[in-house]
Length: 158
Image (cartoon, rainbow, N blue to C red; front, side, top):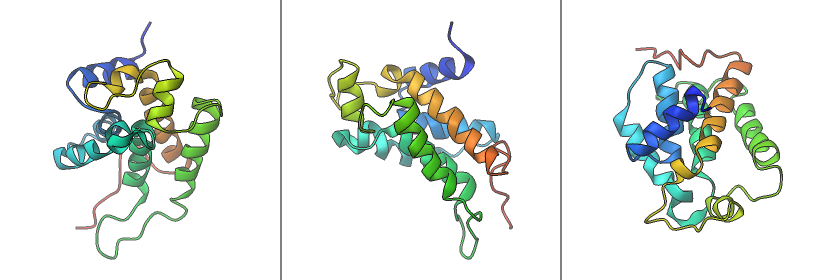
């Protein structure tokens, strides 16, 4: 049986979104926000930045954490220690999600699953649905562990 997060990943993948886009889009939904420009920008991370490099689910997760911890305006300060959950996400991804057996690249993940890496025809979010939903959940958990509310996001000081 599919859990709710995996169902949402597959639904969004069916709409054409890629791994990085889905992780951030789901994170924005938790906050009750929309940001089509940000989601478009996230497409640049698809399929390992179009060359099989760092996994889009992982880079999307890093961006989701950064959405909660990073600087977004002039003179706004990043959350103190905000880089800690970034490193924790990468370490978790390599050790737990990939079992330390595979490099955290899109190409290596596809090949380890017996699939061919083909940027033009592959739908990584559909192929890696569990991975995407796990990264999304872990990114939000790390944000919460850092004392931040994943449903609140950063409060604008306007």
